[in-house]
Image 1: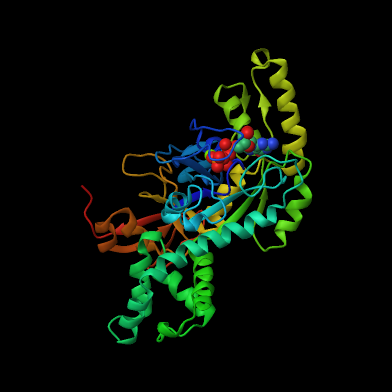
Image 2: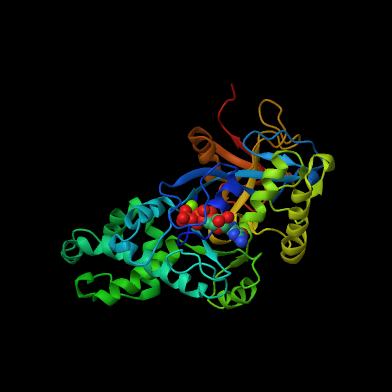
Length: 401
Ligand SMILES: Nc1nc2c(ncn2[C@@H]2O[C@H](COP(=O)(O)OP(=O)(O)OP(=O)(O)O)[C@@H](O)[C@H]2O)c(=O)[nH]1
Ligand SMILES: [Mg+2]
């Protein structure tokens, strides 16, 4: 699963990305700073089960700091998108191509209204960020419409001739955009268009369908950035009324805190609502003042910078993922080499015990007998639907070597 960081130019996408991944990328106060997308590893933050089980863990695919488990996830920082990008304006198609692989989108919005629709700096409070949300939805929809329109008459003929049904045709057509059969089915269900007669669909029908398809296949949340500017707060309330998950955000503050933590000047984990100065003698007066502002204006007011919260929400709320801990020994919670709670695995809600076995190893899936819930020590069957924070041991007929 991969999450795209999207939005018009100059809103703080690269700042958000850099804060989340600690990658060094270009950040500047003008549009189109990013031309080539940046890919990197950010983290999901979740409460680890180690405290509950009262064990000292040795993670291998993730990090555990004082009972906070950080699990790596892939993020892409996209180039800025301007109106009519779908027709190729700005970095148009290039931008849109980057979101092909994204399973969900974090839309970074300049909530302070300090940039116009093209990303040029304007007086804070003069641009309405609601427009940014509307236009981005429209751009992505029209981009997919344009892709579908190209071969539509032919596609419609094959469907109506009974050669291939519409679900399969669309699934094949859109697989490169991370759009799945289940997304197509859901969008058709919502729009109630005639799946037997796609040739009768009007252009408007097609747009309505694709708009639903976009919502199900590229779910989006709003990171309302630049909340340090006074004009942001009122806009946040208005954005919430559009029905999106809206997270107040200050990417710049997160970047400053992460960099200070990296230099071990402060103690701060992504998503914390406070930090602690550990090297007071190494902090300059300017840094101290900046940290004070971050504390008072952002952390105390919003409970965090919003960057971690946005990433968590993308995976947990939009993509409905959960975290499970596969172990070999359900008593000691270890793998074959004795490491305690070695792995925290991010999986979609709905995954069964046997599907998890298959994900770990094909052979483990094939030879699955039952699983053990390490919390209750009870056996569960192959159809057991895993829950968030399950610690699970799979018992198979495979002989261990
Ligand atoms: N006030 C304020 N400024 C921010 C914040 N986050 C980013 N900025 C500034 O916004 C400007 C643009 O930041 P970038 O991260 O380069 O924006 P971008 O969206 O990646 O821009 P493009 O790559 O040009 O599309 C820079 O001057 C940042 O310092 C924030 O939380 N508050
Ligand atoms: Mg950028």
